[in-house]
Length: 507
Image (cartoon, rainbow, N blue to C red; front, side, top):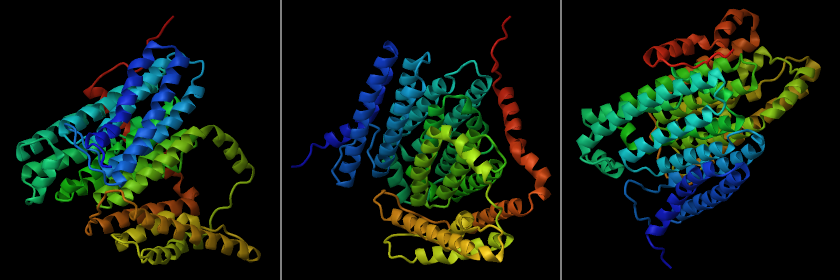
């Protein structure tokens, strides 16, 4: 029996409505009632997100709602976001037990998710701008859950300025595209791009969109707030790092038809993504705090994901987004066990890798990935430079410690295990291309070798740090300070938008 065309659209919109309802009702209840309402609403939203994905995979015709459109890619991300939010909400109800302001926390959590679901359905410039702005505005309440903490207030203020600048850029992009196309609908924009090359106005719109994503995704030089939101409760960090900050990648994948026709926008994404990945990856190696290392790791991963979108590898970017979200949510929610793990490692610290393994690891990984790329997976656009880049990224799994000849069998077993993991990861990445994500790749042959060279530079720095740690003592101090990029950005922020971010002193 054919389903009514409006039913799939209503199912896709239900998660946003459920989260919006809990945002309205939670502040009027006490903490236990607010959490019960959250559990009912999140369960309903999760089932609706799953049903929407099933309907999309089944190819059920969907009648578009004004300014909204259910897409297969959006359905995958909506299920991921709501699944993580359901787990994070359950964790939060125990984590915040006894805290004041829990109903407001539940309301803000529901408001953020309602805006995220609306953004995933956006098919019009106005809906996209409004939904993304709402995500930032409501998120401020979660970031400032402890308003007496100065760095929480500073991080929220820096994010507020970055968000407002991104809003301005999105408005400019929308105005340029609307004037050129004659409509704010994305479907009309795609049809306009199919008719011929983009006009200067659309090229400028693509550049504004790319710059807005950079600001929203905490790339250089506005990455500092992402580190300072560690002052917020751990569930907020999990939600931010596992879900909200990844929205930039979703928007870039959505606008792939526009980005593919504007090389300047793609180069902007590749350049800033690479710079962020390099800097954040180096800083992460020098940090001791578990949560700060996770935060710098998120910045590096966002750089890689934006770079992948700039390179036109949208399927890999989506796989990266899904995998990073799951990993980072687990890492933050299990951060309490990191202390015991660190103590266990201190009792038996790992041996440093041998110099030979530092050189041989990428050489051994490359042919394994090249062989995996030959697997008969339909529709996979896997350029040679991406296999080489992944070989550098996964080479540390093949490092073996400097040992005596008597321990050679142990080193050999380690190498074989590392090669097996590299082969499995490569095969999994290729198998991911066979999943119905609704994404089409368009690799950029000119930017790929540049990304490969930057990855080789990062690997060389990592290898040198392992082989000659004392020779880089001065560099480590700079790296620990984040190369002072955030200090300059913070000063510029407070000059552009002065605010009081320290609590008033009391007698």
